[in-house]
Image 1 (tube, helix red, strand yellow):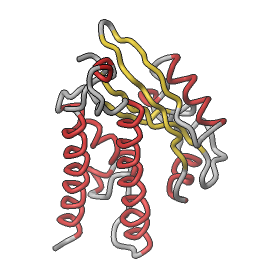
Image 2: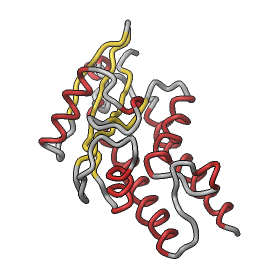
Image 3: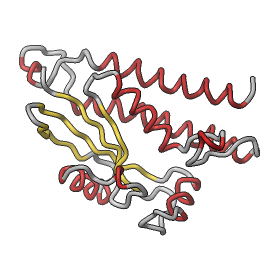
Amino acid sequence: MNMAGQHDKFLQYSFLVFLIILLSLTSLPSTEAADTCNDAIPPEIVANYLHSVIEADRTVYTTRVVERMKDQGIVLASENWERKKALPLPAQLLMEAAHLVAAKNSGIQFRLSSLWPIYERNAPATEFERKGLKAVLTNPDEPYTGVITSGKDRLFQAIYADKAISNACVTCHNTHPRGHKRNFHLQDVMGGLVITIPLNP
């Protein structure tokens, strides 16, 4: 199988893993239902489950695919991956998966956000996000969580520290022409992964 075929199969597998887990979680009772259903899973735990899967997939993709392909001179990851027939950057893979999940209309969403976004769409969308990003910068081992409202909807939101797990992440952010911070190092907190779970029944 050629590299394009392997790349497509990897993307399909990653998206399938996301969707299977997310579809199984959308049937979980809401927090309000926990009073009458002893086996309800609190949204904090659901968010932790989702974060574990997203983080693991992204780490494997970054270290076992992107870096390995680059080191072997087979194919590079590029911001313009579609035009250059390259691999998507790890952040782009996460965003593609997030779009697929959102399209399922389960109400579950996730996105990357940063106090130093390369693109404005990744800036904090709310004051809650801004506070959460500052909190995980200070204490990266603990998610920042809370319940927010959007119209009539109540949403549980968790923000997890997003760290630079490879030299590719560091180099990309430190040299990008739109970058606002140029002194990242490995394992630095670059922003946060924001996970949103609906609480309305």
